Length: 570
Image 1 (cartoon, rainbow, N blue to C red):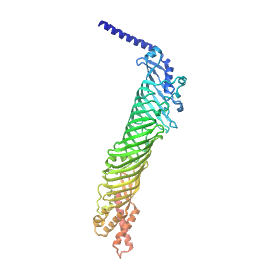
Image 2: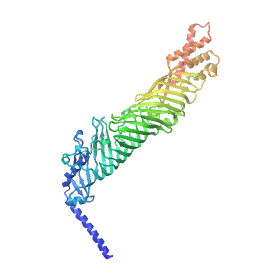
Image 3: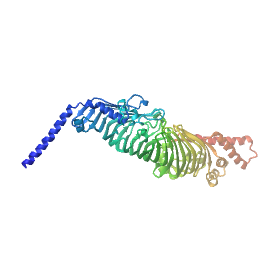
Image 4: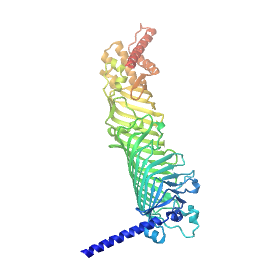
């Protein structure tokens, strides 16, 4: 046992001696002696001129530490550096350094780097030829030997920043960038993990494999990764303009892969507080987007296929194209749906600017639509036909709003508005919503046809022709039937009968949340002429001069105007 203890103590002493000698040797090493060699080696490998600050030996980590590092840019993009970093830690193999004064780099760690990604007017990026030897520093290119293959066991970046500026002039920044990559080399694929905060709102996590690196055009480098974006603010991130009154927050979970310059993406997006038009309001519930897209990295355009947008069982089929070359993403999408459940579709209505009267909601029924959305993401123009069948506007009685004459006739309007069928060709734009033509068939009331729109501030301006159902104007429910065979009853019955046959002009004003209705004077005059004429023809009075006949028409005109005035007061 004593001999064994002596052996162990001897080995321990030998190890300590080696460490002390090695540490002493490291202290005697002039790290800056290796700076030209390291700069040349990195410049050849990266295809860019690399400049290091003062080098120091770190005994405990076995590394060479530089006060700063600068990696030059492609000369076509100016003389500002492509990458700057506060400090660089180079992991090196100790024995080759001590015995042969050779620097063999095993790891790179950059602290607080700043990366500038620039796009020129031709659509080319300053990182496209990163790794090519054509931009190597003079010291590196003077050698006739081919540039060494860049390879390190570990690459680490902490607290970095990426500033991205495109030809369109928009700049996007990513802060608190961290990167972990192992077995990094330009000649083979390697695993990596990257995270960042998106300036303006949101965070990014990207995990996967990258490579082999294409030094002639980095955009052609293959990638296969899982991308997660959380809390991406469309306005804060510069994807939409705050001045246009639109916005939303996205959570994105998708797989991406790139081959031969085409980036494919398939995944899901949960959109919160989505608002696509200024006249709308943020969606009260998250909307789900399941999408499949391809993006051509070289020309900035792409397509969307086999995608859906909606909530619950109401899913719109979406396909089309997009163009990312402008400052704001340009879309050209088709959105289609048949027999979509109204109850599930309702959360989507506010995002598209559809506002219902106060304290009302659509209940039951289904929607059909065939829309096209074109233009920049923050100023979309959405147009196409929309239908609504067998639905109920609960909490709002259209009959009561129109029913001054009906009330005189003793007809009670239903509490809710039951929509048998409604149709409109819509144009939803930043200025508001326009419907032409628009029509509706309302149970226990009649039909509406016309055109008009809603401004961005919610003001309504519709001109409608209302035709009452014969069930309302005829038989026992007619005004004449309810009021007996009096002359006034027959006159009012004639008015309602004329309304049923020829229609009554109505102007819809006010706001979408509080609409108001007013009979068009010209339509009223035409209606009185028709209705009163028929009523008087049935009961001619020889002793009654034409002046008296005209007086009855004026009296009925006054009666209707009084009804309208009373409706306006209420």
